[in-house]
Image (cartoon, rainbow, N blue to C red; front, side, top):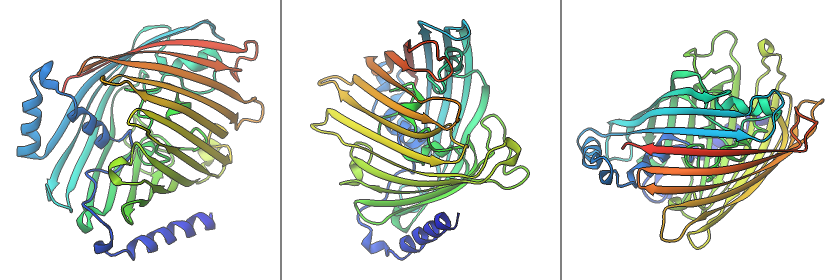
Length: 402
């Protein structure tokens, strides 16, 4: 697409013309959105893990002496549906994750270079299928237990992150997860908030799986950020191939605004344009689209959010999506209540649109352990026209070791 290529070039030229002295205060500690490893480590550092396992001091020493920030957690999810297309209506799965950031160059400076990586073990524990595979069994066209699959052990992101210009320019390259950088929204991730992909991500964007890619982000001033990434459109989560065969790309460019950089996850607006090359081997045509999203926190408790996306082409499973909801931080506790609702116009011409709602309450039993009951209402499931609504009950537990 000539228009998209022109936009990318324009973003590079505009950002490179900004002088470091005009860019404001010190740079960010990491690149990426709420699902990125940097953000998850930041949240882990806020948990007083010494109360549970006595590992808090060990974690601090690793950071201070070696520039290594690392965390380990384990999560399980059980789901039960009141109706099913195939008879399979239960799923129980677990995910063990080891993830970290190792700053090897310029630690403590505005030109730090960091190795970022995560290893996961996703497995089916009991029930008919893993929760990540349960939705199609119910007749719902989507994912209602995001991340809880049975693919085994795999290396997720593995990339180098480098800052320049006193931290105002950042570059990433390696094995990337596109959802960490595309149409980011402050609703958290599948380990601590919602479970349905329709709330956690924009299904109208044809984001590929984890694979080789590179990107650059520029902080123009205190409020504005422009960023772009390019990814292997044929990336596979469990395979370590890099642009195997014919080069096919997924590209995206994003402009974000926030009142202050310190509130970029709680108060922000984003506009994204994306494009994916034709993929003949998968029978997918060239696709492109745009998305807009935003969330705003009031009184440190209430955070309404809104997400919209529109696409052309058959690469994404959704042609148009509208998602809205509200997050509530419980006073004097670290608990959280979330309500999300969505409507989707599916790309497949033979499937009608579908909608739904999810409600969860995350109860932090102790700083390291969270129990999250949830309920999803899957309305007019596209693959199961004989039912008007499927109710999906969920119970998630997450233990943060350190």
